[in-house]
Image (tube, rainbow, N blue to C red; front, side, top):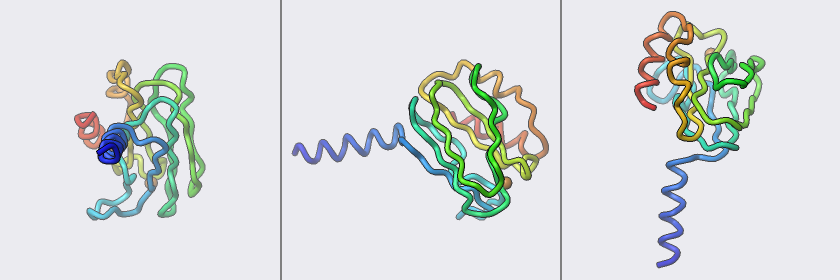
Length: 139
Ligand SMILES: [Cu+2]
């Protein structure tokens, strides 16, 4: 019985908060969508690290909106990139070559969404405008 509770506990906690997540940068995902990150809305806890992997070539990660005081970092093309989230809030990033094709992702750290308006107002281009609205409706 104790084992069952242990299993249930870990199942529950891993779905709520996945510590140390990896996200693939893809030319095409299983659903046939092109130029996408394998996880588009990631929910993590403070202190968790996400590593983006260059599963396909020609992609990177560029933060374009983040909670106050967080540097908007830009990773190198075709390289692994890890970031540890030390501050609660919403982070928006895009892929530099595919920023008009909807290649963006959101990371929600903790329960704090105070910077939602600022994320909504972030300037994005092309197909990404619609994609950003879709993703924001999922947080
Ligand atoms: Cu890309």
